[in-house]
Length: 607
Image 1 (cartoon, helix red, strand yellow):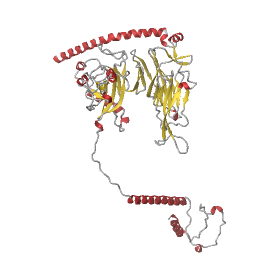
Image 2 (cartoon, rainbow, N blue to C red; image 1 turned 30 degrees about the vertical axis):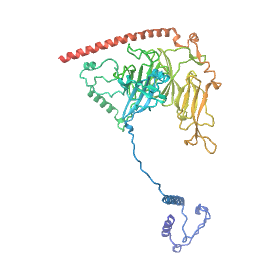
Image 3 (spheres, rainbow, N blue to C red; image 1 turned 60 degrees about the vertical axis):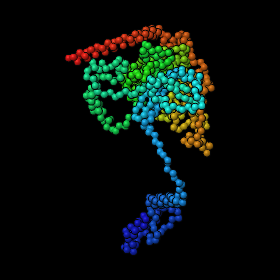
Image 4 (spheres, helix red, strand yellow; image 1 turned 90 degrees about the vertical axis):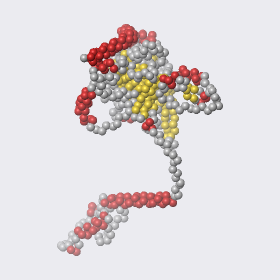
């Protein structure tokens, strides 16, 4: 079409040769005047016969158009063939369902998180459903379970079919039901008692304007000093909140103009705590040693860390016994394995370190500006003796080390010792060029003092000495085993033995090569086993990893053996012994203050 149109235009514009006047000049032929054409066997054509060849780039365009027309024609023929095949098929008989059963998932409760206390005496379940979230706490009758399993009670009528009770084990148990002999039947006619429901904890209510008319009325409504600092009982009016919000929106208007996504439900992080100077309990409560007595928790976006006593009944009012307010919302918290130390990581990058056993904070340490905490791993305290990391024999008090992984893949070592302020060291800087070397997770190795496993995005696994901030060695999987492309390392490190296991995935192909694949049929899973004692560089570290207190005293490797530190420790111990006496005095002061506020309130009413 393009060639024909060009020819028509050429015929209109070209002047016939016989109409030209004057002598004819025949130009000398040159190669640059030859028409350029990529067609083979090209021959000059007469002006009045056939079509002239198109110049570039029109010849290429014409070829592409012809190619597209050919592809379209092939698709049309293929579709026509499929339609013809489908029209010749006989459709099967289709039956409609007899009934439709619908489950309303919005009314069901989903368990988001659960945790069992050390020793198995208590359990907590974080549940959500119907747009609400709450934490249910239960006491587990483990002693009764052991007796019931050792001496199973046979059914009175063995021929009678036992009907399984339609009970939800997470439903609250009232005080009347808790006293009854309620049981669940299992196979073998073994009956186990139900857990005892203790309390239901909900997220703190948003702070609104006060309904109190005077500060004295506010004091009179508060039953005791427990829960002070939570912000629930205050004397801030609605007008004050409105002024505060107006100033806030005026200041940050440019950041709030964008559409805000719906905030997800709040999630709780909770820990079971052993008895200590911080976890105050009633004097009449008798708690066996090694049994948890307090639940510590915080909610998403909350500034407060709450303490709830586990010595409660369903009839008791669910109020926190203690509240720790923080300057910024708490992003995450981590409790050490021995329940001795607690770290609160705030959203502004500040870490608050607590010694729960002794009852005082180590101090506050801040991550570099712009760094935010992703995970916290506690290290068993170790000392460096003659260039080797070693665990001190016997208990060590007020000595803490932990590694902190930030969201930008940087790794830090945080140390705290007694009355000294905490320190922070950079172990691995954030990657700037080689992003594939970024750390995705970290694991502590209890069998090797001061050693951690580092898992990187490039599927590498390396062993680091945090005392030297050096990579000791790396662990590579066999050639026939390739780790997954989208790697989320699945592993476990033994707490008592020098080895770790890691999950590996292998994909096989017809060409004999092995590479990761998402095809489940061509994928084989395996578990890789690494024993530290099987490698010459590490075999002696786990075998000789302890040092006696006498050697430490001779070399002053521990700060506690220093005379000044020892004196400070004794002084602190004496001050902690006074806390019990102060607790009783505080209750008396609170009762007297409340009575006096009620007296003043009555006097004001008389006026």
